[in-house]
Length: 420
Image 1 (tube, rainbow, N blue to C red):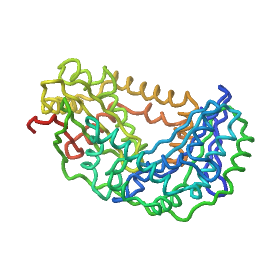
Image 2 (spheres, helix red, strand yellow; image 1 turned 180 degrees about the vertical axis):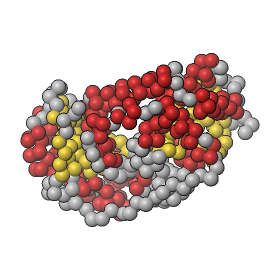
Image 3 (cartoon, rainbow, N blue to C red; image 1 turned 60 degrees about the horizontal axis):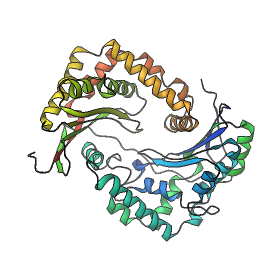
Image 4 (tube, rainbow, N blue to C red; image 1 turned 120 degrees about the vertical axis):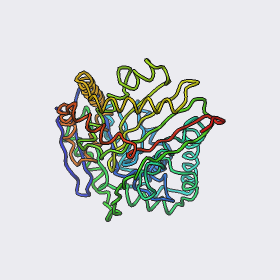
């Protein structure tokens, strides 16, 4: 049981402290409750672009100096963006807590005075190059983007990936950047989590000193997106310069934390989490028709996704792979999940959660997630309870209800020249 202290500054900044003197380190993690789902068609990629922009300096910190300050004292730092949040984090020797807090407060409160067209143009080109390297110019690189485009209607904000499109990045202006920052990057839209070797009173004093005078924003844009039923399976066949056929699937689930999302998480372990899981055992090892297979669930706030993929062995058709997947799902639905599979899935969930809590940086991140998504950092202490209480019947029912054709999008990647 983690000992947490939560409070809120007058400007709306939520703070969670977890004092732990196991190691002489301190982890600082800020979750801004903004991600690609807060963008709009024609202006995608902004949240991820800001992940880069906020390392380009603020009023009292030069371009890339945030990295230099932290790394010069032996610390590590980075940022990341998802559909629902953008976060920034650093882990430092504990006697540099003040440095980390000052750096984060300066870019929260004093980013705009340092914003220039030159910095914006540089970071925009960096993001465009990242898109080329990780999406456009690698085998299967656009698979996730294509699957999202199939699975969601244009008015639902999970339809595009966080990287955004080249066209939208090119069309962005400096005024767009200023407006996005003032709308979302503010203390009343942020959770600050500090974990590690510090004295709580000292941390509170520093947080008050560095963050309390940063002004909150006005109202937030209304978010009312609701996913509509697919009305049948959505499919596509896409030929590209890949060597082996691969199938990608997205099954819709309720949002993260809902009971059926928890059961879906356990189901993904039963299906394809390791060599003992059903799809891996049958497709890869027994029938030897697949190179690899995977199933996993994404921690998404507005609507859940269970992802599945499999790569055919050379000479094996994608139809053979898809039929084998459907056969194993049908067998699970008809015969049910075994108690051995339930034990293994629960154990895996417990191990993964324990690993998140072992290191200060991952612990701070997961606490920030629970505070942001569920408005309660104590969820970190109760997160495993629904996993422990889940039954084989729960998992089987979720497979029966959700792993059906009318609830999925399927994208088939085929080598060029192969008949579709």
